[in-house]
Image (cartoon, each protein chain N blue to C red):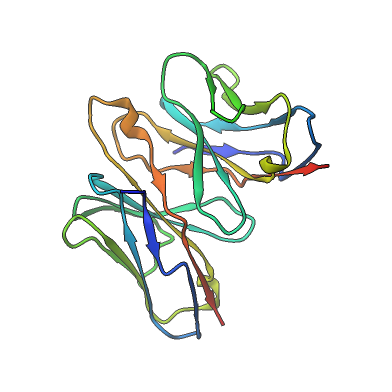
Length: 118
Length: 115
């Protein structure tokens, strides 16, 4: 396993269309995160999963956004009725949380999906 | 809640000169601290991290950072930069209370190396 992979790397869509992104985490990792990064800003947390359970969602995640991790492995992030303000880099990260292992505090990032809404 | 401040949005430095990228954080609980590097059109790569133990941490490519709890800082330094260090650098924090590893990032510092 070479790391976190995201697909597609780039997506251009027309305003109002739906888009779906996929993230494949490092295989044994139980936690998966989605972040959004706009131009000139640091990444901002959107949501995270422990296995298949979605445990936290940011206020940034409007009703048009939905994320799933159905079998506790890969995850999808769907944006419905896209708006120009949704244009950003969407980053996925994963980590392996072990309560007794401090090293599990490290998240590994994919290369991101760059969304452009025209 | 925690926050991260990177005061310098851009830092130009001559090749082979030293550099310091500043990072200050705010948190009411104990934290883990990270520096990530992002090359153009790429995702984030972990540069170094402070989890516990020695307050001075080093990366394999010559960067180092020192955790200073009293000043709530985690500045990144390199004694001699190379052209290949041109990138955006993000400082990030997460709490060490065995909750999730949700990271709070600073706004980034763009390091430009001048030949």
